[in-house]
Amino acid sequence: MSDRKQERRGLGRGLSALMADIGVDGSFNEATPAAEVSRSGLESMVIESIQANPDQPRRKFDERALGELAESIRTKGIVQPIVVRPSAGTPGMFEIVAGERRWRAAQLAKLERVPVLVREFNDLEVLEVAIIENIQREGLNAIEEAAGYRQLIDRFGHTQEKVAEALGKSRSHIANLLRLLNLPADVQNMVVAGTLTAGHARALVTAEDPLKLALKVAGEGLSVRETEDLARRMSVAPPRPAGAKRNAEKDTDTRALEEDLSANLGMGVVIDHKPGGEGQVTIRYKTLDQLDQLCQLLSQVR
Image (cartoon, rainbow, N blue to C red; front, side):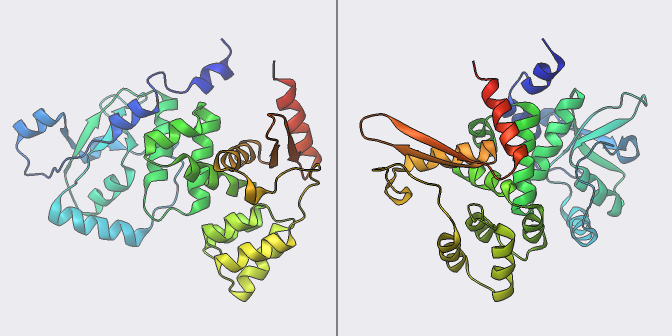
């Protein structure tokens, strides 16, 4: 088996099993009796023996939020344990798999020991856990969340259905967010900055010139509904064969399939299905690079 295939297999145990490993709830503080720690599978570890994961995809931690968490930890303790693995390079040290924010706040709170779960994760599993944890954190904008889903799908070979099931999301939620990654980088940056909401961005995905429309929406303070109406008027629909149904008349399954294909391909997809069973799929590309990507995908089909 090639390295690429091995990588796309991701975790042999599956995403749901991994979530079960890191999704442990239970209160713990420095006064927790040792017997209770043993029964729950937790360990109390000296905080100096824990180090950050150097490959943590999240680089920025809000100082004010960390201070608020540190104050909560001082009064209530750490509610969810930190997941660690033995450090490969430093005997006796442990590397954070999930919970770096809690670890940083615990240091601000001057804790000497913290609750941990020790797990034997490989490097790919550690990266996957970090992505999942970032997706689940509060305050994540739509583009960051979508990028996390895209990493789980592309890097580890998970399907939209598996990601949705493991994270407790609907498949349509995953698909709709993934479509935002088709927007130009400048428009995505407007979502990250809070200039546009995720609802505005979804309305811009099918627009002929998303950036031009995004600037108009932000400049005039248009609502999501107004943006949808404007995008509909400005969009140029691809030619439809005679007798084909309009999108508004399509059934829910067909529209969902169009959205899924658009999200996976990164291109606009229109399905015209006739009652007799035949139909036509139209894929619209915007650049030669997208055309080349489409040709490569089709050449792999056997």
